[in-house]
Image (cartoon, rainbow, N blue to C red):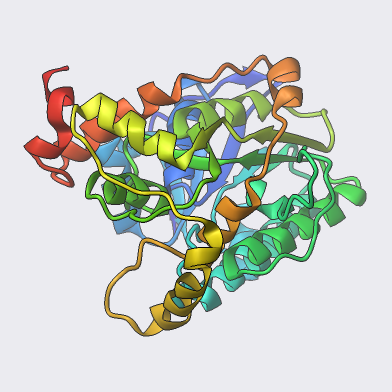
Length: 358
């Protein structure tokens, strides 16, 4: 069912009005991308799973539904996607299941790989330009000793989530090879305020604040602000540029440094101790095997453990040099995120600490 947009803002861009279809627009990355597009004057059409998700997501972001056209459907339904791509100029495919929780392995594969093929195929045949696909730096893991860049080869990694993103990446590159004007973005771990459904990235911040990461191993993680990623997507909404690929991994942060920074910002000591990876690898494997049968969420996953053990390095220079993207300090992102978590009741007054005075 298509919902009419009332007083939707438009922009004259490249000699024509631009209307952008966004899949996954009620998710974390998608919703911030929608806000950034609207603020830039673009017209939006959402492809979402339910009216309720659209309403709750954008009301929390201060966006009135009269500014958005939306169509309800599932990205693994090829007929629904075919209908959704009609009447738009470009598409941003941000729909994905972002979790390393093995309980959702079937959904992860269905949405991340099969759904991507359906969306990219429909957009290609509809001659949309550009077609922006939100991939992940995880799609090019493991690093195999190299500094990863957007043109690094796709491998065959283990792990449900990482494997699904690698398969989707192969699909996107297949269509780029056919001449499709697909721009691929590769974010690192995405964090920031206003996460509509508090996904895995936000859960990590909450778990750190609650002292649930103990013991830990040494390892770096790439962290990027969701608002900076949204700004990149706005920059890429330009036709006639052909196939492109851009990393936005963000800051490469030691996990211990992330905990220390949260301690510094809140003025609360968060205890942890470091152990060698070999010491906890077997327990992590056992926990991962048992996780689908447990009635509660485990903060540590085997895929996350592998990521830390690989300790990958990513090269964002192409993005910063060509597109002049500047990233906000990750301390600012953390501060904004922690204050937002406090405002919605996810952490208490003691846990927000001195940030409550800002």
